[in-house]
Length: 452
Image: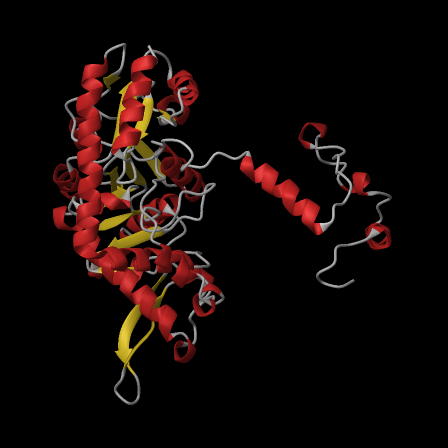
């Protein structure tokens, strides 16, 4: 059987006979009927031109974020997307490369990763960054496990703010359950920030790490110095999570505020909002903990003739060393997404990222002011709390109801907060970015005025 041609009827019959099964149905008979699809109605084959026409028709039924004003967020954000990013990503020397094990033929990829690490260090205020992780959720997991390793497994409790993205917390719970690591959730206070008193009461000598997200899941900026002080007060590792990386254009990274690890999601840096991915995790820490960092590092060196070059400097993955001594089983570095983020960041530059972040900040402030004048049941859930570009709005109905009613008015107004659980109110999580034009913001406010 050719490796690129699917098994035919004769092939399937031979395979079934070899394993002692009379039919494909018998092969899967152990699966419950409730999860079986049954017969699938596949239409007759079409010629190429007809198939393309049919698929274009299906694609035309999809709604994109450019078809109507969109204020979706909750961990995935729509930012400017320069054409140069995709142009560089599409180059064969980047697009087809996998892992830069051989520095003599991978200098371009290694240099990009080195520059990505450098930028992440500058944004987070920490000394060392790795060559990227899968996404924000797994970055949080790796940070928690690293905190556990730093304490040599002698502390088995980690405190996580309820305002950390619910998906990140669920992924952490999955890993922690298998490792015997106890995850304790610290509730939020009335201003939607981590309850500082509850955190102080929860810390102890058995706590290996404290995880706080800022801006948090509700868009509110946390009191990071206080959280870091509480963590260090019991000797724990302070971990900041960032889900909206564009905020680092105006907000100090946790490294400058006492945190030992800053990690999270870099999708905002040049990666479009897709159907659940791909995303890009980032991770930075203090140099003293570099041996416990997951993934790998690219470093700068010189070759035999004294010319500048790059190579893998530190690799702590199970592919490189004995599995029992590996700090992580991450098997790729999302290098292509790190390339996208690097190109995007270097196109904007430091001043450009700052301008972009300030644009998000000012547009969100404008919306907050307008919401206060709409009436009809619309209001800010936390009017006194500082936010970056996301906020929880309450309205005349539940979150899911408001989404449907606003969509009927031609606006993708946000994400229902109730779908994520948590003790926060039932409303709409609304995200504003530099892509939110004045026309779109006016359309949102007008639609809110009609939905009463």
